[in-house]
Image 1 (cartoon, rainbow, N blue to C red):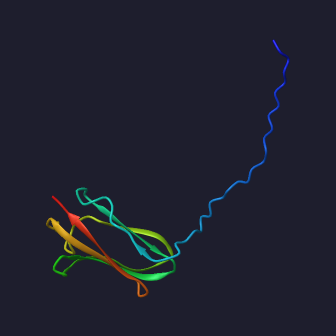
Image 2: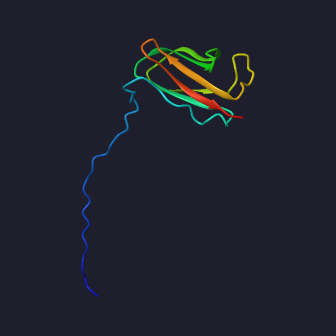
Image 3: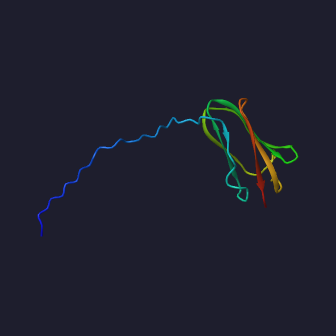
Length: 116
């Protein structure tokens, strides 16, 4: 048996911190998730600065189904939930729907499909 002595050297490493104040650099509207086989879906969007935000769901004919949001919001990563109901609380039929975001400086829309 050998009388070897093992030496282990541990070097100090830099610790990375997570900045809790990280903000998006650009406006964005993301695809809803999960799809509407589920009871609700989430619509995520990014605001690089404080803005008045309006998010509206339209049917494929361009008729407003429901206004989900119409408020001033701080900069950051946000989401809103939709339960596949119209403005008076009735479930909507299967089909294609369009959701839009308008902040004054940014406008975008995406399609979503409801299958029942």
